[in-house]
Image (cartoon, rainbow over all chains, first blue to last red; front, side):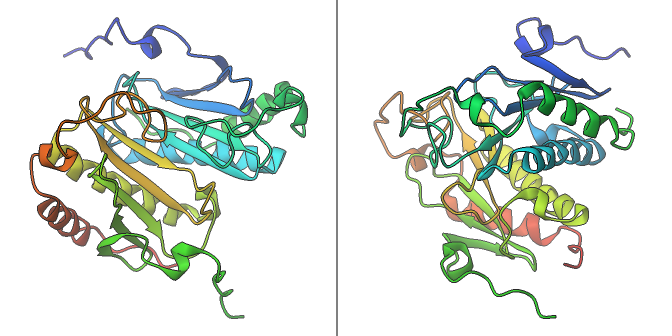
Length: 153
Length: 153
């Protein structure tokens, strides 16, 4: 039996979904284009599954170790106030984890990025990050490249 | 050296944080009191850590396997449109995972529960669940009780 075809109407099956930072065999990391939250990454599972619990245990573990590695790089590089991690998928039910560095000065803090803004920034948020996004992307790719091999599908 | 004392100003160190469904050695599951989202649970790590990546790998794995078990019970019992999982902690930086059954008829769907409501319900949301909350809590406790022993801290 061949694997089922991915649904043609799923944007995360059709497109990268953002600026590609790293491609692993079973997932990819992209940077979202969110000016208010410049350090906003998504770890997108390569195969079309809707829920985290659709993955078998070794793949769940590989997925979350990758999410955790992204979190660690963001913490080390940016010293954010908080990391926000979420798998929602109400609009695009293809498993992806948002990993977002949050700062007490950002437009929505302490609200979730999906909540109400509480302040306006005098200058673009990206200018307040400790390092440029290109360097952050590089550090992430370097860290993810060094991860142990992923389990077979 | 003794373990550091938990901060006295952390509500999740001081209080249960909701209706206690199951207490494991290293985490607890509570049901939140959210009338719009009656199947809204939180897996709260027992020790005071802020970020997921503050846990060592075996504890990260135990944590996410418990989150996944909650997700599986909600899916089996309620057939929700989607499960939402998130660790934010901007207001209470003590590691906790929101696990929320979402329905295409709920007040905010497809928005996140932290976003804008898009409809008003004619009757309490809890009445539309396939089983009563007390039975859902029981199924969750039963499933979590059956999980393998957690790793040592």
